[in-house]
Image (cartoon, rainbow, N blue to C red; front, side, top):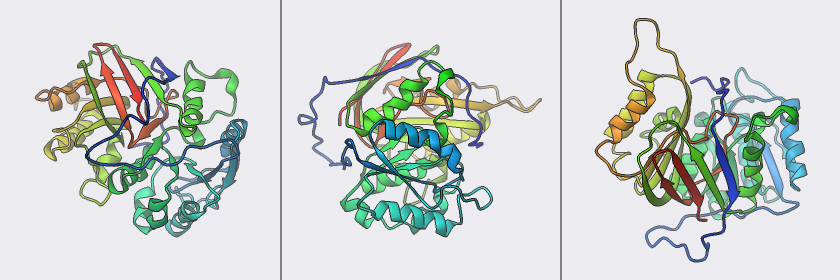
Length: 340
């Protein structure tokens, strides 16, 4: 899985504030999840790197944008340091994340970039204070380790979205929808209820459903199987994305989800952006991503949406992972609406 290889395409999608549902009216009779406090002008965002390294100049566009939004920024000690592919040693990365988790002056934590490394430190983190006083953690790709640990083990919502290395140095040449997807981070952080409307050239499986949104990078989801951070999918809307994988590898990952029962009791399935590695000559797999997905869910009736702009794409919208959403899918369109 090449975390430095980004998909150079966009998928049409519109993100707009949504006010059709009252947060006060929405309750779940079975389980109560924790939604961290939303931010306001002057709130503090800490930036740290529990995975791959990033230099200060690469973080600056993100800092400038957050300050433009009215937030204040504190940089962790892992910004600008490098230990091979990592942003410091395991001990340094764990200590930096722990400090931000425990610091009452920091309201939200954004990851500098993905890469690899979060799984090496997740068991070093003490979440006891965080569990009592949660705050938003923002990122995607390798951040899936944190999202699943928070969403499934602790029941705390988080934000699956762009990280610092996804903020462009030059905003004059953005692709359509890119600026809107960046701004979606601010809207979600401030508590705006969002509706995302997506279109696809593939044929979705229509339906209307409601459930807790859960998921992230498919390779990371598989990597965490059997661990304390394993994904829990019952009664959830699952979203997945990936980059730089062969079709046969993706097929194997989907078989893992199917054989482990993770697809059995879904409320819905969202297929995000996938950049697929070309088959080796003479070793063609023979199935498309669409074929792979539909083969695994053909016995179920829940809605399935393809080409949703989430993942390693320029138009990568902020999703409130671990929170409840409505999903409405038609043959070539889908609407995802936050409820909390």
